Length: 148
Image 1 (cartoon, rainbow, N blue to C red):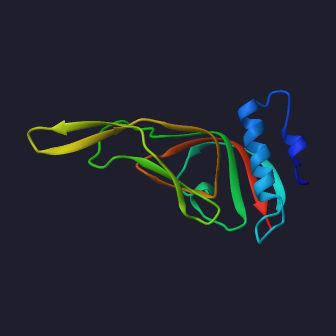
Image 2 (cartoon, helix red, strand yellow; image 1 turned 60 degrees about the horizontal axis):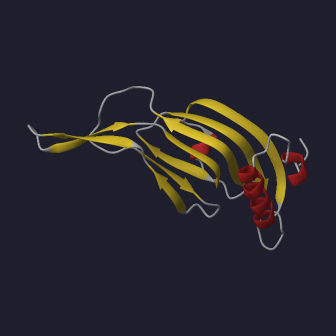
Image 3 (tube, rainbow, N blue to C red; image 1 turned 90 degrees about the vertical axis):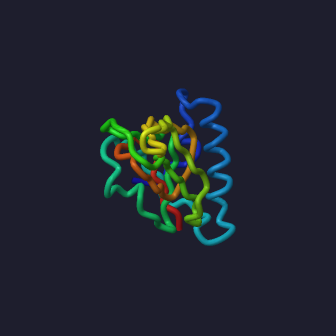
């Protein structure tokens, strides 16, 4: 599939926030100023299912994701002794955003906190990979970007 230009991504259904985000993304990553600063390919990507062993968890210097909407959740209920979280990494594989959405419970019999996970939703984000603890499903709607 050929590279989608910025003009190809801007559609009548594109929100003003998405247009601003895409304009910034293309000006930052498609300027050829350094290594990995040229967009080679942009492919639409929709995925809904388990996050275990998916490409979203693996870093590659040539790959980024543009997420119009990313929802990470846990299928099974219950509480666990550690809080769940998601870390999104930037193009250099550095932590750029840590998100968590949970309810904390305190056990008075055995003095310890327990956590019940709730879904984490983010819109208009770019990331190279994600580190996920105690979440097991993902809904991703956006694009996979290949850089030089």
